[in-house]
Image 1 (cartoon, rainbow, N blue to C red):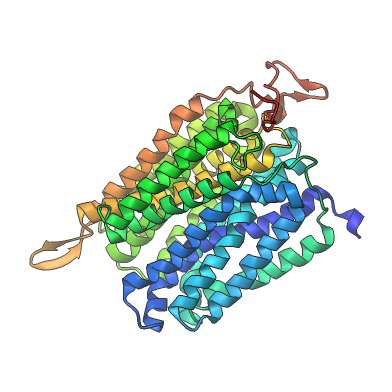
Image 2: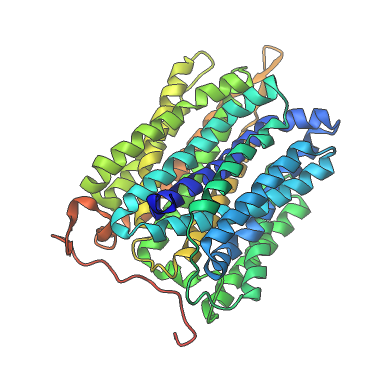
Length: 492
């Protein structure tokens, strides 16, 4: 029975389940925060620790995930991370106090910080460059379906059952993924994982954690707050030291030299900016529909969900037609422009605009999202060697997490600066100009990624373009750059 399931299918199933849980968690918990606060009889601002604990813990452990996967094998680490995430989800749902819930969310972040980078590395090692388009199509749906379905599922669970079910919903998915993976996943460890780089782990983990804390709490505590300023400044300094130390290290845990590869660098930068605009827009649209238009959480979630339908349709269009036809450079740039256009048009929504316009624009944003996500995930790793894939996946996903947190923080700040409410005829009403400004800021994030997309050379990603592959390699295109390996002690 084991032999009948290919490694590609096995890794795809387990990783898709893991990344869906992790992506879903980014939005489903937010829906339940007000109810959790009321349940524990604490101030609304006190529940922020639930999200902050998860983000900081995730940031602390994400940098080490690539080395752990190489050292102990992707199967062991992916399944261990999924078990941690699932058990922590069960504990979160059973928490009897806010302090317990915050602690269990930190534990959940440990699993979440390792699941996605290790799983992505396993997937890209299972699929050779010529088949990465298929692998990326697997990644697109759970990565975007999770955040889009979070408000719907969260609103339904909170209103019909209890806030505890937003955590318990992870249990059947996690149990199924671990059971399937334990039976069918193959154990594989890299031949030369290198020694554990303690300095790199501490600098990168603490630095990223401090920055994540600062950008996630900045809109609530105030950007001028001493804790926020010191956290962001200290985190930035530590990350700068990480670059210096890891560039000189013989066996770095954060392989910053991989950013010397033009394709990986440009794809990662475009991915960060796109994620900032995408996750930020999901957050702002939820606020616009609920606070600006008076919809309930479930109704707002259903109006956001067409984005996931757009991704499902767009991923098929991208993988079957557009990527082979256009190549990564034009495909990525066109997708970013399409997303920015859809988000920019959201700024035209007024108090009397039909909600179907909002749903149509969410669908259009999903179409564009599929183009960019599939392209960045397919092309960015084309010139990265199998040996370096684990560390590259860690950097790619760490950037995406930081981009998501930054996008939400800056768009929330934009709404706060303009003012979410104003007086009209003596009554305090929603100020839709605040949401319009946030939508325009999100569109600007996506447009900022276009120059990075245009810096890509299709020749570098030639092996990933199906329409131009032949039995012996490439036809009608320059040979791709050789894979970028991990630096060794003998490297200059």
